[in-house]
Figure (cartoon, rainbow, N blue to C red):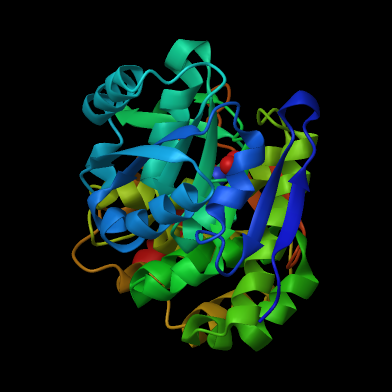
Length: 370
Ligand code: GLY
């Protein structure tokens, strides 16, 4: 089994390490102790994750002499709102968390985003450690400092950039993920190959099935390469003035599909990203930006992995092409009223554009709806 690897995110005073390896929760005390001023931490997690990973984490902290308290929130996307945010902030204050203490976010993207935002505003900013427990959180949401909650007006509309002090991505935790959740996270992994590293996409074509089947070395390599790519992009553009938007490949379509399915179990975020990537490549080909081979390879790989690829793979009815386009227009990545898309000149060659004719998107969606 490969040892722990480190990806450093070089952001001057906000720099930190992402540690990637098997067994990191069992070593959490030793990993976190050097960052603590006093040997106390507050952990926020959810019911599902707590049942699997909270006791081992607390035992590991205790071995290093670190006292911990834990708040266990309900699972699911609904947790990422004002109610549980207020509850978390008040609980952290009751625990007397001070500015130089650390809060631990133990969970998937919902917990990471919510707890990161609570840490960002608590006493005008306390440090936090991300221990991501889903593949999606390990390769995307735990790295880069985007934190926030959803409101009645939309997803992630209230939040802050607040970088963690450390990320512990324990590959072993992925063993307990249901296959559907694992594959949804894999949608974000594929995204990295598609947006900027064709050799990584080649590697995923060869090793993706073994990775999904549980190959630990393949999982570690895929997480490490994804995190490296994200780290380099975040270093160039921490607050998404430019290049960071490349991470939104497939997301404009995905957000419309998530809204159209009421953010329900019909479509997980990572599944929407995979379908969105396939649509973005198809659109790129229609606009003459890339050859037919590129979208064909994207689709073939997603199919081989047993993932959703087409709109028809989403159970239930979808609105028509015009309605989906209108939902895209509500995406927060709209600038000056124009839709911004991440398109591609080939696999690994994504770029941002605001020059997409409305008719091209409409035609693509009409055909995709069948
Ligand atoms: N998940 C996209 C980003 O972190 O920018």
